[in-house]
Image 1 (cartoon, rainbow, N blue to C red):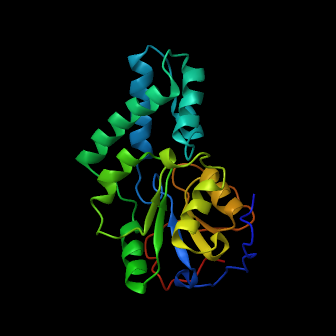
Image 2 (spheres, one colour):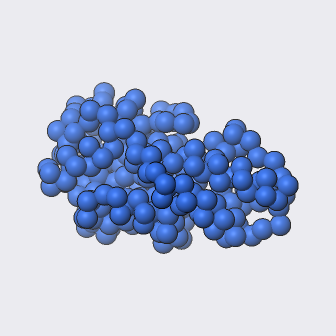
Length: 230
């Protein structure tokens, strides 16, 4: 599942963030703390159709491709809605919440600005769909992301490596030369399988250690010149 021709990444400990060819960002839980918004949408969906859904179940689908999450929800809720219909109904709810307030994760915009000043290209790699990403991008400086990969533009979502391989290809760099920033095991698996070094910044769910993964408690205080955690 590794990108053909990608180089094996060296030990990243102490390496500066701006030494990577590009930084590839997850969105939900990483750039923005929207996971609670998704939980609200899922709970409302269950209530609307007389089903049940718990916080524990919501946390189980963090980082999932939306259609994959919707398939699981349809099965566990036992509701007569297609996965695509479930996704659209959830998106309506989450977009409405985001338009009221974008819950930026602490330090995310500052790190993005520092990378922009340092000339490091960034990509957004999210399993959310384009219509949800749009209102968030509109609140960032134009050109913040050189490319955007969304869940409705790939055939296989996270944890498959396709989203990250797609972003690297669009940036004309090797995935093995990129740093990915993720908050979930699903996303970290996708990025590491593509060959990226993964900076894991867990928020709502624990992320286990694994090859190619380094960890930080927060994005706050990180800049383009910051060394990678050991």
